[in-house]
Image (cartoon, rainbow, N blue to C red):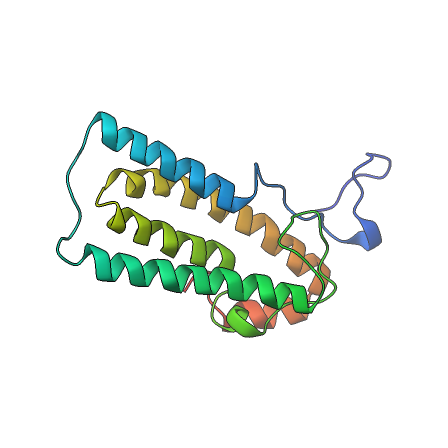
Length: 165
């Protein structure tokens, strides 16, 4: 992403600017989930896969939270945060980032699906779809920034680690 000189939006050192996001992704996920629960209260459309809701839902929540926390801890090790205005000093490829380029989004999505199972409702799964579509657009902007910032190092990472799973 190259800006015209004098536009006031020139990236430092010729690099792309990090993508913006409406709000922190956990907040967006919580809003989508609450809307889904609200829709379920208005018009219940059925249950999920009983009697497996509790064990599968619980496992998904645990795995999702573990991925999310693992990503935050890995970020702290290199003194960065998930904030979109916080430039990472290095490309993070260790810890849970070895398995997913987006373990925060993946973790919160798995926990979200698990919570839907635990609440035994389909509506949050419906409201998850536009959230995932939006997050995929955010990821595209994040990856453009990482490519501009880390170049070949990001290309190698991109080619060896999946975006989600």
